Length: 207
Image 1 (cartoon, rainbow, N blue to C red):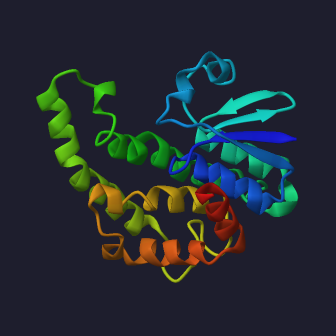
Image 2: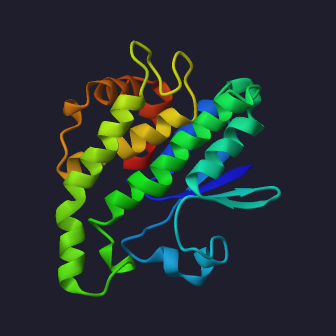
Image 3: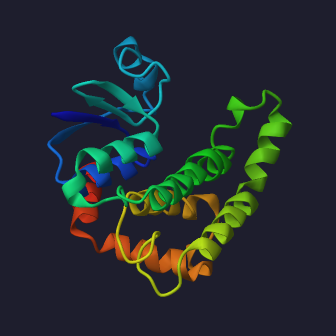
């Protein structure tokens, strides 16, 4: 059985949704970031990075959301969560998820974890001040890239890109960005909220 280590409100939500959508045999283990559980020896033995998500498999531990999402899609092919038979289309999915991980998530983190990049209080405050601008710019790019008149990130077919966009889109309100200014992103967010697997996972994480 797979074990997903996650925390409420984190990017691990994307992996949690993907596992549920895939019909995987898995269990979730909550890591209390506020209590510092990610820094304890017990968790560092699982993920020395001290971050979530971490997915324990029978072959070892996987970390980093794009890697976990790709693993879920590739190990549950019957769920059709990625265009695995088309190298170019799969690369496009990986490019989208990599952008979310390397650019959008980092822009968001500048507002909450500026101490990762600076020690000066003024520099940290300036990073935090700019988050609404940088997050809005990131989502303007996503809005431009999303297909017109198609329900999902890659077009007609739901994929591992969709729970990841949904997860980070949920952070916009806390970053003082109005999601409705991006109509395609907003419709996608609403569509995701209607999926049974998403509702099940959100209820589980809220419990």
